[in-house]
Length: 305
Image (cartoon, rainbow, N blue to C red; front, side):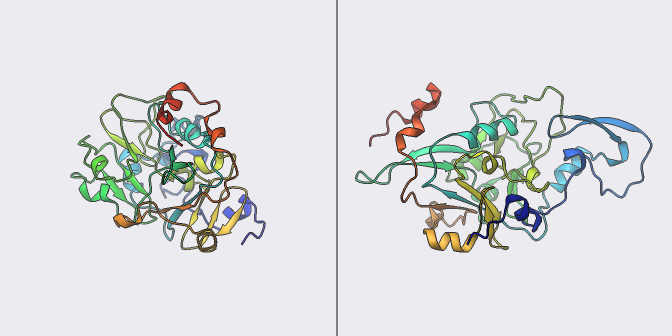
């Protein structure tokens, strides 16, 4: 089940192979086929660096938005969340906010405290977007702003979004956020990219994107990489392999051995996120309350256990 592959070996095998952008920027194309123009311009990369490139290699916003709809050929991404390991460290939420330049009021991955019945123990429950195979959000969008790619990732084109919130109503998992105000935090203006959701646009909907831009660069999503407990696994369901950055396992075997399930399976949405039950939890539930901001702690005050 675990053949001691490192994350580097895991990625080398091609799990996350895709079209990588040079200089770390989703807006610079090294495969455009266009001859160099000789004219140099400065652009901001996704890791915050300003680089100088030939103008012929820079894509327009329209090109970026169109290419974001295609997905990575031959891939079908999946996420597995091990509830037995979660201690509500919130690193997944915080790093996601930082990486997507989100305000504190918007959380693409939110951690809930659940208790299935009066006699059962509570547990922490991270909830990203589930990137459903039958996404209700896509079916109700009147302008085609939200869409599902060939690799299973569901994105929102905020340039097309009219802010009607139909997708928010249609999503049974409350996985979408509405930008009531402008929340661009970049010091230098950036070109909009649906794969990063940045820069954010006031009056539109956004959500977890499985870090589509990082996946295209052979990187794991922010939440997977940041979790100190190794709670979140990410990979390719067709290749039957997932990793949490430290451990690489067979997806099918992990789900079978640990009794994996999909949240609210009866809805017929067919999520791409699976959960492993909180059996033999590694951390006491009280640990998850330590160091929380008061506004976050307030969310759990009515939880009775």
